[in-house]
Image 1 (cartoon, rainbow, N blue to C red):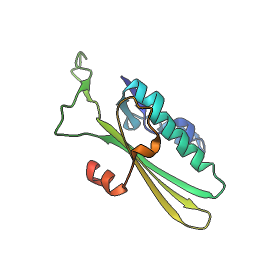
Image 2: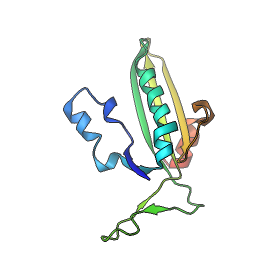
Image 3: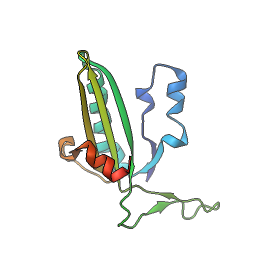
Image 4: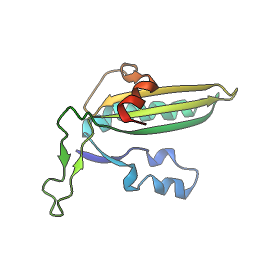
Length: 137
């Protein structure tokens, strides 16, 4: 299990403050190692590639954990001497809003199970309404 940042420091290079804020605990979450190094990394790379397109003016990203409360929620830190445990999310969401240089808005949302996957990112694209329903936001 890895505790990783949800928003990479690599994406926040405009100011030192933006970059340093990626290392706050509010941006950290436990992810399974293969999930983080595979499908999550591919999604983050795809978003950076999207941002680099000449016709994309602005990009806004929100991401976070998803818990399915009808399933067992595992945690890390059970042996912590301070008795602090951290729940492990069942999945993660990432919603990406882009604005083109013509003012057109496009929203893309993804839900990825917190597990190893070699599937295409397209397999995980969902409606933003589903993300809202699963997360309560």
